[in-house]
Length: 215
Image 1: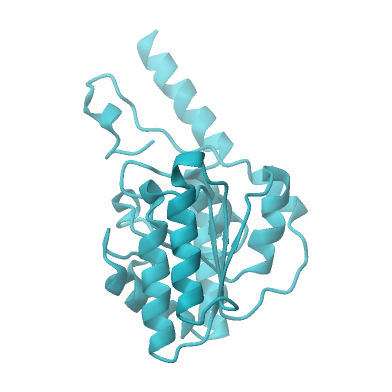
Image 2 (image 1 turned 30 degrees about the vertical axis):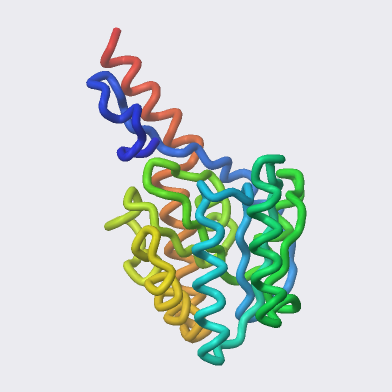
């Protein structure tokens, strides 16, 4: 799926849409989105750059910017210390009520999290094109990413430089300050992007097309 994946170097590699099940959009709960609410969903591990997101949030809070941030994700045994260090850092800075860490939830429940939050952040490196990015977009969230696969495909305001917490903080501030009308317009842009380019039907059509070419 990602042109930055290690498998993309092979000549026979064909880049494919993610294959988001757009039928699931029909059961989006009608929940109020908390204003200035941020969601991070996925494994709590260094490979997902969760520490970078926490540092960006700390920078914003120190600048007097209001928000709430919820992290949902499982942690493997070897990363438990990493998770505890993140929680301790937020707590030591008096942010325990602003930055919250929760266990992972089943896929059947993630729709509730997307519906209740305004912004989703994904700091996974290029080559790791998480499906949660497209789930969040399809469910009406404003999504900030550093993945270069999405450069030129989504509005620049929602892209930040990889491994750069200051750039993430700057991008997040811009999104937080959007008007309600602008936020709704961008939600429509993201949903259209997923429907047009990363739906299951898009994946099926490309698979069929490539299979026909090889016959």
